[in-house]
Image (cartoon, rainbow over all chains, first blue to last red; front, top):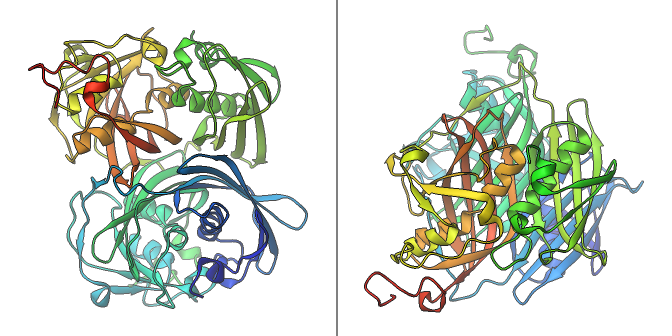
Length: 293
Length: 293
């Protein structure tokens, strides 16, 4: 499970063709393909086919596919420059229907190329001193003032492969609504790659619920990641920054920091939001005082 | 010139097919297709074909095309939901080669859907009291401490259709490197639509040069826009937030505000950066003291 292909269960058929099965860690809690897995496969395949690190990838969610199904992945290099490749990745089910489509670029960094970081990392307690979360639903519950620990949700799907902890924020450089921080790592403690950062960063809708103080989830329309230079890190800090919600659609960004405060990437997404009645969600029904609000 | 199709010179052939010519206002200073024009065409066509407002669009730049050439645009609706459509737009030259490819979604806002703004608008002087810029190169020169007014650049390409002014920033909610603000409008003063916001917002690379204090430009690998609810506004405030540069590639976001401080959209992009020797740029060679640095 050291490589992205191992983690994502990708088997390559030929240069631009590969395949994966929707195993449990690639699924959402409802058993369907997890959006973070789709962008992770796109990043891993863009890097494998072009033999260059990924710079940016956008993944559009067209349809869905159930656990256990096989997905075919076609990676096309649309343009090759001296340093940069433009790539398109298209994933289809066994009937040939498009499941997700990605655009992106890979490229070789120039040692003397322009380099700098223009964002500040929040000061937070380390992962060893942070509160465990079972899944993003722990945050959804907490945003609504419910006690997530009273009735923990069953771990399933991608949450089995992920460990999440919420640190105390000692100093946020730019505090604002929904700007929460989370430590996240692979449950098997393998260092985070760009593909796995895409897998772990799919959490903007949760931060939108937080910003509005409601129990809400989102269906992603896309996941996008913009990648800097990576350093070896087991935990990443997701520094969530929701931007806006309008008429039930929401947008936001998440800065991805290494354990030692290096800005690895920024991820963004647009989601269709759904507000829930907390009393209808299993495991969230029991508020601390017994009466969900 | 009231509609996006008029401004962009789009003629529709049938439901999903249309065409435009690279007229001067759709070109860069070097006469090739301007990236902002490509995302604007993608937004306008996604909205026309689905008859719903755009929510998010990402445009990937695969190749380029010269002034005067014709471009064919194919808009495919990949999925149709009750509210949301997933769309793909592919633009090709007359040899059938892909020029740019876009992914995006359109959708109908729900009147009772989750709504909120989680970012703060900078307080700046109004457009009537702001310094005129001839083009983004005015900012490139200024970032390097050169006097842009001594040797103004010739207006050409998209800069003929755009008016830019730099206000004084009275209060920035989150100041940082390269976080500059610009008032921008159509030169013909027509209200800004989502498509025209995409056209005007293509300026992240300029802000990266600002953040690093160097004379630099960028070739966009993509333009992305995430759209909220629009209000009637002639000027928009581009609130630029460069994120990082690594090995010659840079990423950042720009918040797009209306004249009265409503967050209309957020746009982001990844670019391949090139640092220039100021003495080699016509019109930038004459620094205030005669010796470019």
